[in-house]
Image (cartoon, helix red, strand yellow):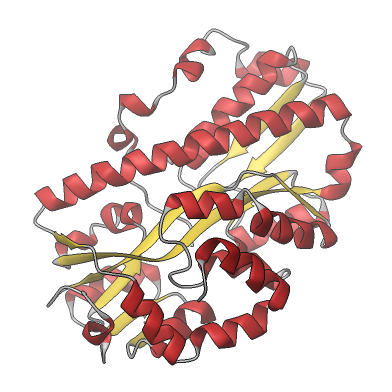
Length: 342
């Protein structure tokens, strides 16, 4: 799930406005780009307008226009303006949309696209980016290519997911026994929390605040930015930095439309979108540090559990065996190259 209803533009701070964007301020205006452009391309995303996954792509669009004398007009549409993530994914596959970003977990066309969300696979970002920029990511991208989609080498960061609770901190799998936790409907989440002894419950995100407030569920799990923007700290006391799932956004293009572009245009787009993704990752990392400080100030109590007992419980519960069977030996072997044995 995308980090929706993000913190305000002000919360990202002036420090996240890159020198590159300032340097481009005097470049071609949007009307001038649109008038001159030979290649008019659309990029859709569910990220809010002030999310780094939008602002960095917009920066890349400005760079593309400047580098190519306005011949490339990459128009960026945030906030699901062009449809839901599944809708935009389908539009991109059909060629109705040029580019979009979404999590590999959010689609069913290429099941192995969700392998990055295997629970407790990546201890830290060093392992995440080694895997996703390396052989595991290459394997997943190749499967999307077979489905008619070009995938750029550098995925965007959508953050680690962490568990919040109202009555007690979550320090070990024992603390999840019988714990009523709101989860998305995806089976990776459901099977993970069942294997940990919790009671996963599907609740629409729009109803989550009230469900926590009235104790319909005991807790929930999401990236820090979404916990903050949805003000869940008002109805939750504890945040366990479990980092149990890492998720990112692949940037997709329709393969036929992509290969129809001149090689030099493709090279320029690739360079700028990959660079935007790397900058976006740095932005999200800084934002997470800011949000921990902000929510601590609002009264939330943070703890950082040891991940190994959770892995051990999942292994004993058959979680990893089940998902190895679903993703296949080849993909699982590549995952464990970076995660270690699961």
